Image (cartoon, rainbow, N blue to C red):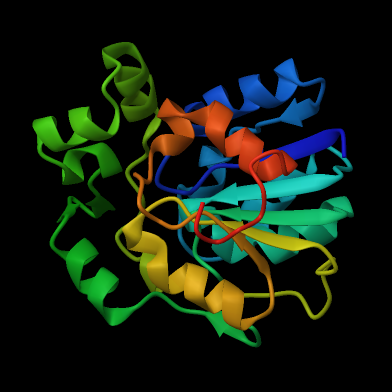
Length: 225
């Protein structure tokens, strides 16, 4: 599978997937990492705009979504005719109907709203905590600079899924404890799951070679890796 489409989450920009894209390209893959931030400037219908912007890159063998991008992956996969769909430490959408944001996250986000916008994701962290996630200062600055301030009502929008999407080869890569629940949901739905969730969410930036090994099968498929 040579053509990859990497989908960044609404809270961040394409730089968070840059190191992963570089590792895949080094192995001969054709990789697209579109900038989708323009799709989330307003909340209503953001998922339609997000999907359409991702699909502009054209057909892809593999669609991979990181973190909050998981809720739109079925729609993106359908739009580009993917043969494989990968959730990378990402939210698993509802099996049927629309995906809604948990009351706990909505409450958390409500406390981060300033002048009608949600504060950019890097500011949710203390400086030393973010530095622990992203030790390289240049990478940290690049990722942080791209993070948008989402509309205050962003997480009140329910995200519908398509009636049909290419779900014959679906995989989940579990990086961090924050996505234990999503990984459990993936297993319950019969998806292939790799990783034990003992790492960090931003290992996608700091350890892309290990993640590519999991994605390409060279690290095996055991859930305890």
